[in-house]
Image 1 (cartoon, rainbow, N blue to C red):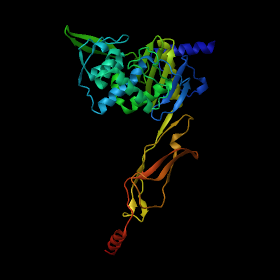
Image 2 (tube, one colour; image 1 turned 45 degrees about the vertical axis):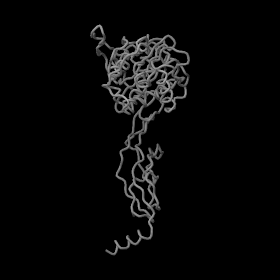
Image 3 (cartoon, one colour; image 1 turned 180 degrees about the horizontal axis):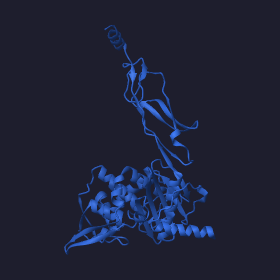
Image 4 (cartoon, helix red, strand yellow; image 1 turned 180 degrees about the vertical axis):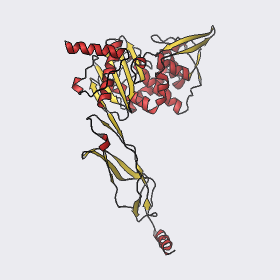
Length: 385
């Protein structure tokens, strides 16, 4: 009884913006009341905790993370711009649930509609943007499902763009984490929207202009000091859901909660997972070293420049001393021509206490063609000179 009472008290403190110290906790000691949840480290996608994370459930407005992802995709490829003005259709204006009460024919900029979706979870703004990008919501939803498939979201089926309860519209906690990670890492500017607490927009219609206040549905933005986003959702079928992102000491986490009984429970569960993750995680980001050139045998050039194929990040959950990570470079004395750009030449191996924790390939920066007779003559001539 005493232990249960303590847990309740800690949850109440957290909900009123008192951040608990993030101490290392064993996974079996972490408990959430919601039936489904997951905790993911953002930079690598490492899963730190999961509970029934692959069961498909109604996601409510957490759906809008994918809607915003497609909006940012369209912004990136130049299909739309933030200053474009978009007209609201009668169908978009007819959406129920959470909305900003757009009227048929009302014009708003893409930037304003994005803010309405992110901050106020506006269903009408979602449909307006879906029609702007794809002409109709059905085509937009098709693109949502295609994007989900590309991200490896195996337990997702979108039927609409806003998350209103509809038969067959479902996602898993893992899939929500995957799309949250994509949005936060590919388009970090989303934080300019999802961390807004309160802001006004202006409705301009035939009746004139009027102010409308937006208030963020994600209370963690005010209650949890490390919060960076991302999206809440609640309907009769979905109950209470949240994809909560947070950052502390260079560690970025995503906590997804689905099917919580009430709003406070979902936030309490999210904070429990985030605090567990911050206590458990430390990140090692390898610095790129200057690499030597490699001798080339039988090539038009005698030396080959090499580079890292990608950066290396390691998530440690064992309390290791990351200052003792060893980097072992494995490069051959020479390679034979021809060499194509991007060919793997060697690798860098990362170890802690002799145990390999990962590696990165070293690849050819430029191609080296095989030397012909004329090339050998030129080399001899240069040596003589």
